[in-house]
Length: 180
Image (tube, rainbow, N blue to C red; front, side, top):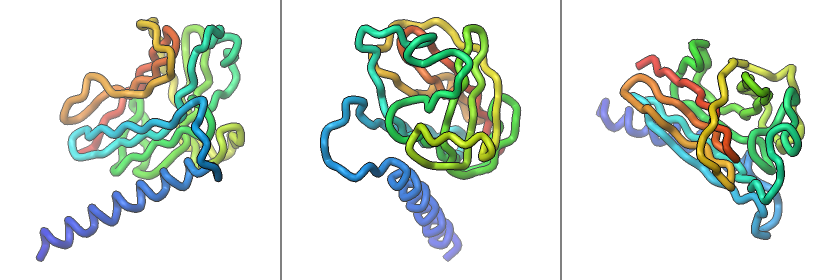
């Protein structure tokens, strides 16, 4: 009976997570998107991290410093807010973040980026700094060219991993540690 209860709670929890993500990504029409949505999910230990986001393209534009200005908050993707869900409490770059669903914003800089977890889920341009839950600083790296923005995971182990924000020739690694 205990195992059945655990399975039921797990299924219920995942249903709530995916309902939150799909609600944040609703837009009201069925037309194809210029910046299509994508999602990625990674288990670190027993913690599930799910990211849903819009994938803008470079399209022969200067991305960082022009399309995405330095030192201004960016929705980190296209269309609706990028949404990150953690099934359990985690540490982001050594700072505690409770289990839950957050919108992800960044503040790009030449040598340092702020990665912002915000509790307001909305269209991406409705950033409200009073709803910031966590801000951490990370160092961007140069990587191979990526036409469409992509978020993925690297260096995954039983207790940590890096969520990578990669677009154009910039890779921004965000360290996630689980508390299993």
